[in-house]
Image 1 (spheres, rainbow, N blue to C red):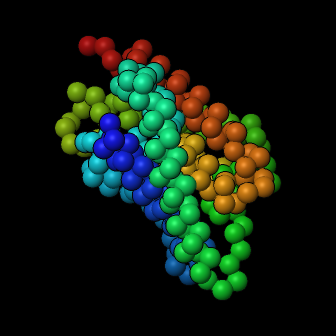
Image 2 (image 1 turned 180 degrees about the horizontal axis):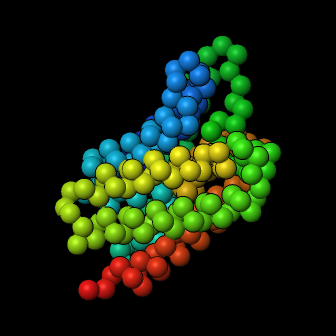
Length: 228
């Protein structure tokens, strides 16, 4: 179990460090040209690479909502859920701390949003709380369906990390303008702790919506995908 938890912490660290790091350190400079698309790709690549690296140890969740969904789907023992979530939170917070240490080494550094998730005036595109709830729930639900389908025995062996990584890239391409994209409570929590203020006040949504979406996605998969 300790190796599983270490793998989850390591994978979540890489997801936050690579994905949020691309937003904080690279996308902040337009001349580098990565933009929203580059950040979306960075998040997808973090999951793809770590799913191959440590997915065989822990299952490669790196996301509390994914762990909840996989528990509902019967893929993760219920007794493992809380330890998995705690390990993911540890990895995410350590990554955010490392990013803060690096970013604050630049003259004139201001923490700003620190790649946190938000709605209303803190949405990149000014989208409402309802918009944020709906998109986070829908996208996390489909993410669970893709994960469950790609890792099913019927799927081609060895390709699941590619499908899952590309799915996360697509999710970010859709929703960065709405919420700065969460679909992952650990990722949201880690950045909110350093952004503070409004980010902490709005954090509830980025736990509730992804977990609700994950549960619905898992139930849909159980209804249509686990048969035959």
